[in-house]
Length: 357
Image (cartoon, rainbow, N blue to C red):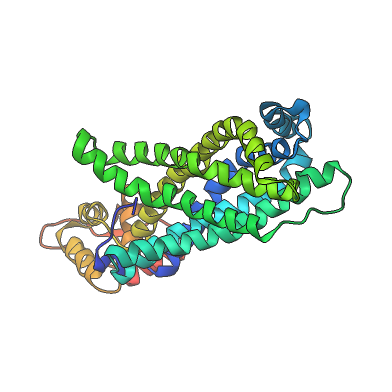
């Protein structure tokens, strides 16, 4: 799954909408972070395959696309091509994250969970990628250079794009989990290191198969009447540089982007847990502030409906907001002689809700 599994009690206390919100924010943030580089490579590969790249070089095409972010940043950051890419990967990361949430909350496991997750993520990625690649072929392909208004994308190209995406998602989200377990068992790696290595290596390796499929699909758009021999000859020329570029592209797309998405998801889930369910650290902080009687009340609240309120009090206590003062609403003293507590003024309604839970 990539993030720490919760217990049934934690899932009952934390609203599903909180986990869904974390899944969405993490996915969109990760996609926006890696989209500029991905767009530059995608645009350059399409241009090179169509023979419209500057100087006929894929590397120059990537550099030309990247330079726009420095020479004309407003145009580059508002270009439809950039946000097409961000939308595709934001949707893909979100689909992966929310699938993990559903699997965890429903208790689904085994092949049903894995294939269900694969189907959802592949469906989202495939739909977005096919539309994006067809649009890129029209925007940057041979038809543009020839002055045509729009290129026709044949059905065979859509089929190849779909098959490519199935393999890409498998290499990005299915193979890394299996590779991680293999690395832990055979190479004595820690799960964290094995997971990072598998996530970084698996997606680029899958491009050995995916890149020729991608280029063939583009060739069918750029040269609709070419013979099989002509297509094979074109692939021999365009595949080596495109393979390097698309393999490097996978590092931010599913390596760096995947790790960023997983890290943001884990931190967001931890934040949700602290908000809706007090940890042992929260309760300890409250007990230290309230004394024995107050600590017992805090534990009771944590077992009932006051989880959210007592968690807020616990965080406040660790920040020094809760203090012992005289004149509190609690009993003036207890059998230990400890002074009661109150909240400093200015805490807002959250503090009042915690006291009344």
